[in-house]
Amino acid sequence: MNMKQPFEKVVAEHGATVLRVCRAVVGEHDADDAWSETFLAALGAWPDLPDGANAEAWLVTIAHRKAIDVVRARQRRPFTVVAIEGLQERASGAGAGGAVRNGRAGRAAGDATAGGNSPNLSHRPARSQPGHPDHDDAIDLWRAVGALPEKQRLAVAYHYLGGLAFADVAGLIGGSVEAARRASSDGVRALRANYADAAESTPNGAAAAGAAGHPLLHTEGLDR
Image 1 (cartoon, rainbow, N blue to C red):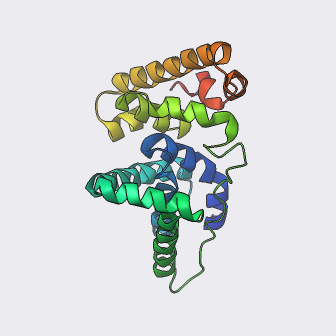
Image 2: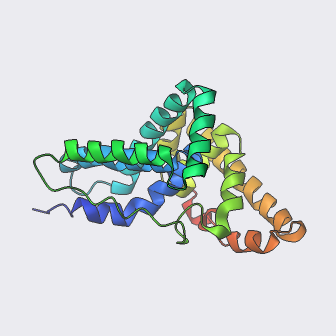
C-alpha cells in the first residue's frame, strides 16, 4: 500500500506552478489570494485523492475554481474601496489588504487543521526567485499574458503553465478540444512575437531578452 507524501511536500513541489497559473488567470494583485485559497482547499481534500492521481493537474483544477471565486469577489467590490485599499497598501508598506488576506488564510488553515497537523504554506516562491511570476526578468512577460484575449490567456495558463491536456482545458474554459488547442497556440505565438519586438526596440530589451528564455515561450513539448 502506497502512503501519500506529506502535504507540505506537495506545496513545495507544485507551489510555483500553481502561482504561475494564478498569476496568469487573475492577475498580479489577486494571485497570492488565489494561491492560498487553492492550497487551503486542497489540504482538506488531500486525504481523499486517489494514490497515483496527477497532483499537479488536480491542483490546477482547484486553482481554476478559486480563480473564479476571486474574480467574482473582485467584481462585487466597489471601485472606491479598491482605490482606498490600494492607497492604504502603498502608504503603509506592509499592506492593509495583505494583512486582511493573511488573517483570512490563517483562520482558514486553522479551521482546516483543528485536529491535525498544520500545513506549511511558506513554500510560495519569493519575489526574488526566478520561479515567482513577478521576478524582474518576467514582469513584462506576465503583463503581456494578462493582455491576451481571455480564451487565449486561460488556455495558455492551464495548458502551457499548468500542464493540463487540451481535453481538460476545454472542459474548464468551454468549447472543443481543437478550439482550446488553437487558443493556446495563438496565445503563445502572440507572446513570442511581442518578445521578439520588445528585445529589439524597447529600453527594457535586456529584460525582455532574458524573459524570452522562460519555459512559456519554449513549449513545443507540451502540445498534446
